[in-house]
Structures are given as structure tokens and as C-alpha cells.
Image 1 (cartoon, rainbow, N blue to C red):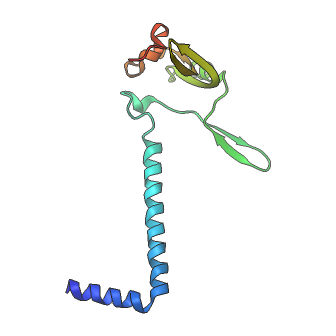
Image 2: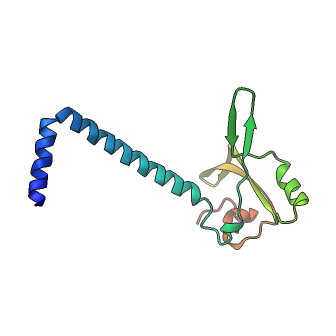
Image 3: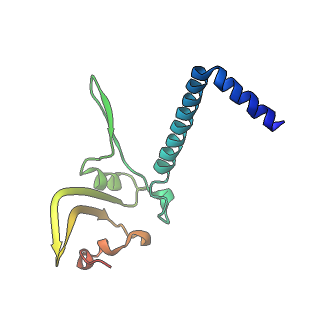
Length: 141
């Protein structure tokens, strides 16, 4: 029976070649788009899930509305971190990563691009890594 179905499908594809190719390409494009969307959403949802207290980590974004445009940045102004810790007792601490693309640090024969890290009471065990200790900041393992 399965052999008969394949024969009928091939005959139909050959008889209506243009229409069949259009349907196959549309189905391929739809499935590919759906898979890319699933991968993208899974990546966005998994943000900071490796941390032991991941349910308590939030990322702040700024939505800027102008008369002719609206856009969202994953950026908060510099005084936001200390102010939100001061104003809201449920906020325990904050961490701010400020990329410094022009800062270049050299240690022996190795070069490192700079990232400035500001933190307040950031004592989670999972992120007390080498970079948190200023004495070991430029050492590699």
C-alpha cells in the first residue's frame, strides 16, 4: 500500500511539476522559519539559566518612544542600579557590565579587551570567578 502511495505522489508531482515545486519550496521555507524561530526563542529564554539563582536574575531594558519611532535597548542609565537598590527593598544587588571596546590590557605577551564591571554586594558563588578578583584578573588558566 505504501508503494502505491509513493507511485501516486510521484505521478502527481510529475504531472503538476510547477505547482508541486511551489508547494514543496513553501513547505521547506515554512519549516525552516519555524525551526529558526524556535531556536531563537529557546536561546532568549535560556539567558542566565546556568546560574544557581537564575530565578532571581533580571535584565533591564529601556524602551524609548519618539514621535516617529520606538525602540528597545538592553541598556539602563548609570545611576539606575544604585537607585533601584535604594528604592526597592526586594532588590538585593545589581551588576552592570560596561563594554569598553577601546580599552586594551596587556599582560606579558597576551592582550585582553576591556569590560568594566560594576557590582554592589554581588556575592553569588556561581559568578565569583577569576575576573572578580583584581589580583587574578589578567591571569589565564
